[in-house]
Length: 313
Ligand SMILES: Cc1cc2nc3c(=O)[nH]c(=O)nc-3n(C[C@H](O)[C@H](O)[C@H](O)COP(=O)(O)OP(=O)(O)OC[C@H]3O[C@@H](n4cnc5c(N)ncnc54)[C@H](O)[C@@H]3O)c2cc1C
Image (cartoon, rainbow, N blue to C red; front, side):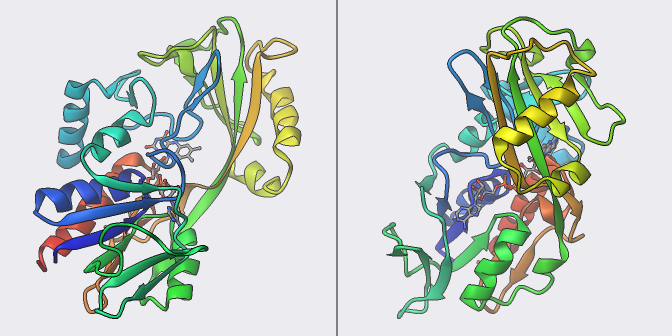
């Protein structure tokens, strides 16, 4: 096993890349977006900075505790409140740290995988063969993307990955509100028992943030998000803004307002195994959906995926 293609530059894919490279296996990561970190995301505007995906992470297991300690030493993570950690200066910082020295090809939405003439794996997007070093000669491929997005890719490519479709991930509408002034949220966040709103936080209360006044992030409940999934973002923004006023004192016209739809946000039903690996085909899959709705689960799954491949090298 010399060179592995990894689809997805979230925490799972980048963790797999780190462990494989440490084990002497070269990797190339293909990522559809311009950024890194997937659902550990940060949006920067002129005046504000919002973590509109994952809000924080906890570390329970030995492996992730060691990783978080390393991120803390590197200045890319810090405690927020209690045992909650955040990326610094934004949630994408830990992913950028994992990606240091790795080959990441951005702007490629992988739409098909096939064996090349020499038997190696080849990566395609809608424009055809992707121009990347080693393409056509990859010894293995890892799908480090949400399971519901991996299923159509596996079907189109004729990949055999049993139980890929057993994981379920709930959607989430996120609302970003630039308040322009400090808004009181005790402890920086709240989780109201409410049919529409699951989470409200002031991202300005996180360490090392560069933001004018408060930067409020609201997450709608899975039920409300599912029921309103196909609404336009502008409509969702005004509906959620009305709701948030029950809990925080937001100005009539916020300095920034935008809704973001996460079609696949939090794992509702996990696979219950750390990763999937078809040794005969040399195809694997990993991500939070294997173990649970947490950044730590994505990390553990990425590590398990790399170890499964290294044990065969
Ligand atoms: C709103 C929200 C709130 C959350 N809150 C928390 C929280 O407070 N605490 C916590 O621990 N976790 C939280 N999470 C969950 C956490 O973000 C995830 O568990 C974790 O980031 C998943 O990492 P991953 O690598 O498995 O997947 P992802 O982060 O989804 O990474 C997958 C990557 O693959 C890319 N990709 C997808 N398809 C393709 C393709 N065909 N070709 C190329 N690239 C592709 C994507 O662009 C993405 O970068 C939250 C998530 C959301 C959305």
